[in-house]
Amino acid sequence: METTRPATVRASVEHAVEYLPVESREAIAERLGVPPEAVAKLDANENPYGPPPAVATALASLRDVHLYPDPDQRRARAALAEYTGAPMERILLGNGSDELIDLLLLVTIEPGDEVIVPVPSFGVYLSRPPLFGARVVVVPRRDDFDLDVPAIERAVSPRTRLIFLASPNNPTGNMVTPEQLRQILQTGRLVVVDEAYYEFAGQTLQAFAEDFDNLVILRTFSKWAGLAGLRIGYGIFPPTIAAALWRVKQPFNVSVAAQAVVEAALRDREWLMHRVMQIRRERDRLIEALRRYPYLTPFPSHGNFVLCRVHHGRAHELHAYLFQAAIVVRRYDDDWLRDYLRITVGTPEQTDRLLAALDAFR
Ligand code: PMP
Image 1: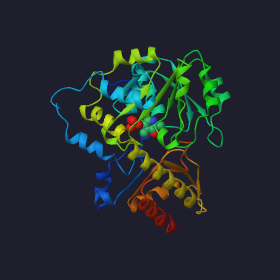
Image 2: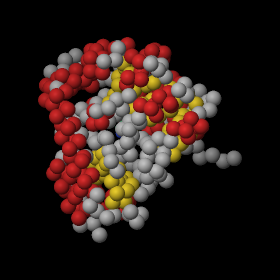
Image 3: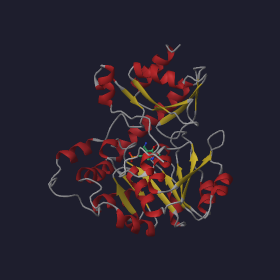
Image 4: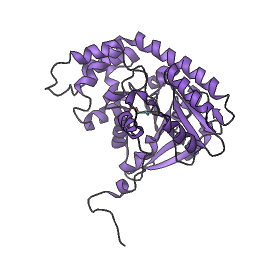
């Protein structure tokens, strides 16, 4: 049989799920012919307020950038132990929580193993496992996007290695309840609870890590801490998984700058939580306002984003229309979310711009 695949590229890479293109604010601005500041970037759940002042100070006073970063991430882990209350030995940082997802797959998957993903959810849970030889088993959520726990239990097979749950879930905004998590943990499989939006929700399932040795909690500084550009994620891992991760992670996976700002950001957490509360209030205003458009149905959210159903099959049309107005929201082309847009909660000015554009959408 003929193949177009270069002999050096693995089949799983050739068949990799392609992402809808993600563009930087600069690239978008260039394409639209506007200054970058004029682009309302509401497509990646970034934080419009950025990090607290202590982060800029820490970055300005960085020393020793000619030396490799601490491979043991000691100071950042100590700061996170204090912040989370989890023992330092169970904490490990990644180059974004995206890297930690890859590392978890690397240490758990043998070819042919299975990963369960309740959909819709964060696209990375679908795109990365096949690269490690895993088969993704998708379990549709209920109509209100709540987890279908019996269906998840039925999907568990002897080959199931991981179950990915996001709480709040991206993009649907709803939480995993303690009862649901307990039931899913009782399958005995390693359960990853991705709390990327924890600070916006104010609720965590971390307490289960004390009783269950098959629970991983993932977090990030990309959203609440306004530090997406520095790529800082961390996890609280069961001891055996933590030990495995230490064996395989690249020694210098988290840069000197990233490690330094962890401490600084956590020192200024009051400043950050003030902005988080501002974003929560803005989220509630945005949802209320979106409800007034007959062609939209916004969903409640515990994150810094709002999923919105766009009626009459016009989601992609609305996306393109907003894009022309330099308002960038997230669209989808999979079966579950084709009729939805996800809007990141921005500043009040960005919300006003969005609403004005929606008023004029015909
Ligand atoms: N998990 C979820 C649920 C997310 O939405 C995101 C960001 N889109 C991530 C993880 C990745 O975060 P990071 O920037 O830390 O890689």
